[in-house]
Image (tube, rainbow over all chains, first blue to last red):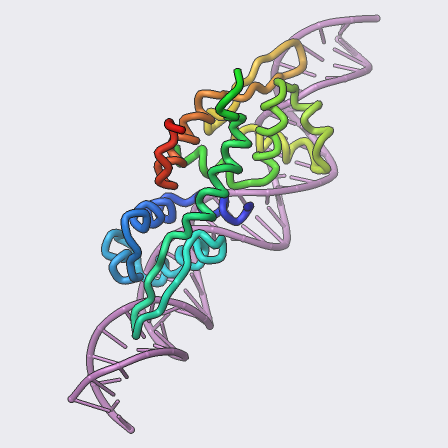
Length: 90
Length: 90
DNA sequence: ACATTATTTCGGTAATTGCCTAAATAACAA
DNA sequence: TTGTTATTTAGGCAATTACCGAAATAATGT
């Protein structure tokens, strides 16, 4: 879970997740949304993948990134535990 | 909001927030829960304060740290937007 | 004024991060 | 094989982070 929070600490990585929330995208398509070099983005992808926030799928020369919803939800639960939002009480 | 996510990226800082969820504590009392030097902890406090996740209150020589619930909840909402969870309902 | 306690700031170092360009790899087509 | 496209890895650099011990600051008591 630590890796997840570290991955979420960078605005570009959060924006990538936001893009993938709509639909899975290949690296090149994601890159068009950011004014930074592709190798830099590739580094961000690897952080997200390492945190298991995204999964990859190769189709020929392109690699498609998918948001891993279950890990996002686990992180959300962890965050709610931190925030003390138990929903029912108070 | 970026500062909040950055602050949450360190496990010690998350643990500090967890402690403060139960009750406000002074720096020294918090320090007893961690095997790290006080200046290091003081740096973590300043990150949390800078992100507005905690507030401080001086009583004589001691400084008490309080969890800032409203910012925690804002962060939670931001996170839910990321995760695509509709959040309020259910 | 001096001492005590609580906390922070200072000064330094090692490790990590974020970014880049250039080079390497992978898949596929001509 | 050679070429093209998509993406990653390598190498390097500047900035930041995390940590520590020592010194400074703040509040208060003697």
